[in-house]
Length: 221
Image (tube, rainbow, N blue to C red):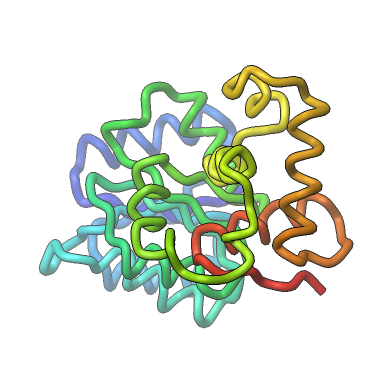
């Protein structure tokens, strides 16, 4: 699996390179500026991009901007944002096309290698890996927005939030102290209430998460 990595801090960048290579990834490019990132994404078209938000030259939002621009030219390009900051506007824009393959982790909340590598693989496969703090900030502006999300019960919203984090049914059951069957029933209800048409459950799962994070339901073809 080929990775383009963007991180301006040398030690962190080298550490991520070694961590990813130790788990079987190939580093197609490792860059430290926004312009270099955009060029690398368009040139290498990797299986997944791991991107810091703030990159030179201005250390504001170059990483996210480069990822957004590349994703417009390569629809569905998997992007895992790894940052110390939550940029709500651009995070929502990454989610807006509804194609999945999106993650947003906060650096100080990645506690071990397995957590990080699992997130990279999940995003590369078209899924989501969202930090709970990112989810909370995204939902602040959509909590009262009218629409199908308002049909969900409090428990169904809890299940959907854990789905957004990338939790499996078993992991959700363990977190909520309920049975796997109860989780499956909640997820089926979520699909129905968000009006997600029959399709592969993995696809509907991603679409339900994107609907939740965007505050609007989207149809699955």
